[in-house]
Image 1 (cartoon, protein in one colour):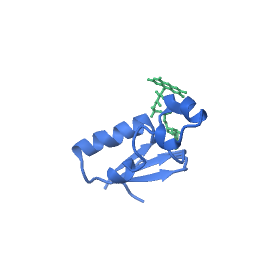
Image 2 (tube, helix red, strand yellow):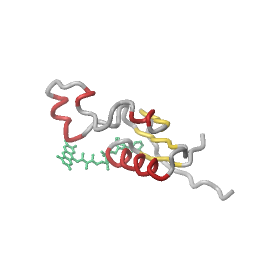
Image 3 (tube, protein in one colour):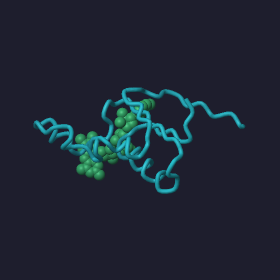
Image 4 (cartoon, protein in one colour):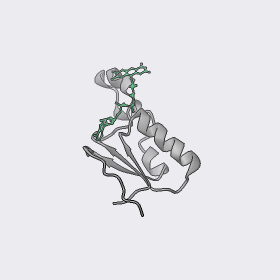
Length: 88
Ligand SMILES: Cc1cc2nc3c(=O)[nH]c(=O)nc-3n(C[C@H](O)[C@H](O)[C@H](O)COP(=O)(O)OP(=O)(O)OC[C@H]3O[C@@H](n4cnc5c(N)ncnc54)[C@H](O)[C@@H]3O)c2cc1C
């Protein structure tokens, strides 16, 4: 698989990176790799979730965020090493 942009982690930093990229590049392919199944929840709201809230109530972006931003979300996968892309 080849992507123009590869982001490790889909939490606050990853979401910010996606939004920044889409601000300057509407079509470049983006992959977000996360070892979490639903990475875009708000960590500060974990306590609300543990108190019984639904996942949809603690996400920092809608669950449709990745599709809307044309992101290939590779959730539930851990990236251990990145290899530099050879010069073309
Ligand atoms: C309980 C709690 C309460 C908080 N409350 C506040 C608050 O009130 N105010 C505030 O400003 N901040 C708060 N924070 C801190 C805030 O959540 C973090 O600053 C913010 O989440 C950092 O975002 P990040 O994207 O940099 O990192 P993270 O949120 O840690 O996200 C990194 C993501 O990358 C994934 N990842 C890491 N390594 C790999 C790998 N090798 N392969 C694949 N995926 C990987 C992780 O699983 C994770 O999903 C709180 C944090 C916690 C835990």
